[in-house]
Length: 106
Image (cartoon, rainbow, N blue to C red; front, side, top):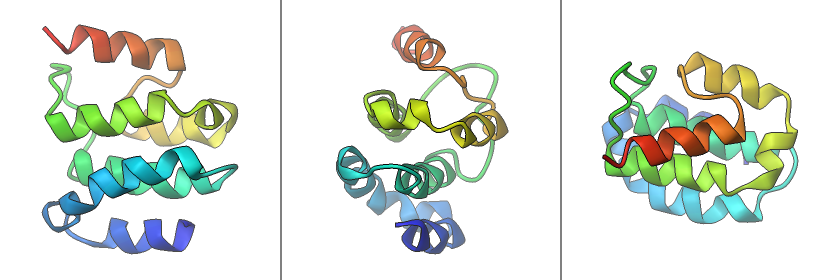
């Protein structure tokens, strides 16, 4: 799955946007570091290669991706996820991400 992730990260985010639902659906079936192979393109595509803006306003695609990530317990057991999430200025703990998702609904 990491090879697929590298390919998707090479695409312009607008072109990869059609892959978001499929990546989110595949995430629950991923284990170990394969989880990061799906999370990385999800972040690249939904955040258009940029970090999250300070306003914490999420698009529907961003919300879908972050919710899928939040619900995957294996992601939170991988230490490298901290650096990936930090690079996008996203919360690096499950509790913080849950708080962000609830706060951005208003």
